[in-house]
Length: 125
Image (cartoon, rainbow, N blue to C red; front, side, top):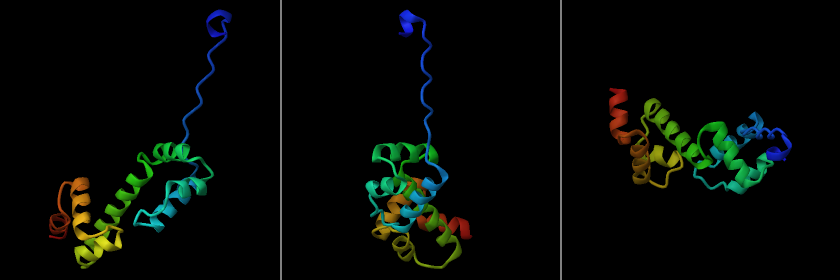
């Protein structure tokens, strides 16, 4: 129809992210299970979306897929605890949902470029 009938092309549907309420609900559920045990199906269901659409919308809203956002959140929570408390790195790692201190150290170093102990030492002086 476009080529032969001079009909204009239909505009593409805008790519939308989550509504504020959906984003807030999804983040709330992710934070409530810092160990990552919440499923994509549960997150999508809480937002009233199919899984694929939820993942794309979450990424558009936050810049990251859900589990990457959760990893970022856990690292940020760990940073706060390292700065504000004298808790051991093992306590912080468990409190932030990491399986053990070694796992925490690997993820932290991959994310920040330094180990948690070195990061804490530099920032706390």
